[in-house]
Length: 84
Image 1 (tube, helix red, strand yellow):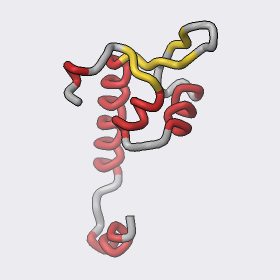
Image 2 (cartoon, helix red, strand yellow):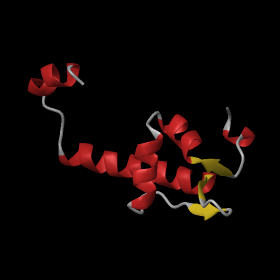
Image 3 (cartoon, one colour):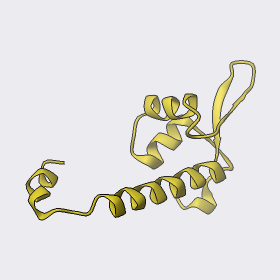
Image 4 (tube, helix red, strand yellow):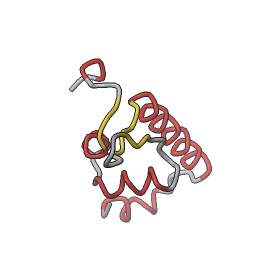
């Protein structure tokens, strides 16, 4: 589904699908404050604003780039990389 076709607010299961992870992992990210979310309704269902998800992904990309810059690839690690 294209971003333009998505609603503004996503359920945790939808975020998990987009990030290819579990709903439990997304819930943990929300509870740790890594991914902003809101609780709505009487049952307090969690929703993530699509803009906040996009910001989260951008922050993760920047953090990954910083990690790569600080830890250059060593060809000797190639055998371990194949196991990932």
